[in-house]
Length: 124
Image (cartoon, rainbow, N blue to C red):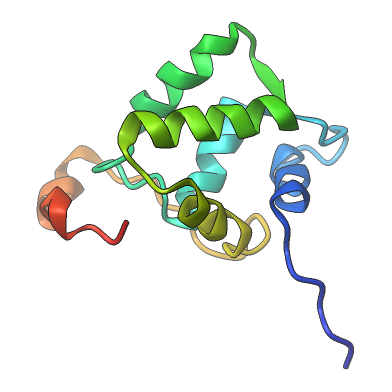
């Protein structure tokens, strides 16, 4: 068996930009697809980082889809705003697998209280 190529942030961007619609070019990504990617990577956990946080930063671009360079700036702004380490977040995003390889569940409001962890005990 041959060795698999290591995932890169731009290759992951391309496959998640095409999420649920293989006719898309993969050059731009929507907020929904970006959030799905972050949720699959375990970055978007509705505690330290929420969909509201990503929406506020994404809204700065005033468009529904952004390209890779804009998305990298979006990620940098998001990490700065929430006090996250950008390199560590990029590693999570690189190593989360292809879309659909890991189950992605959107937690419900009540689930938050069943699995509560204080913010200082979170992994990143």
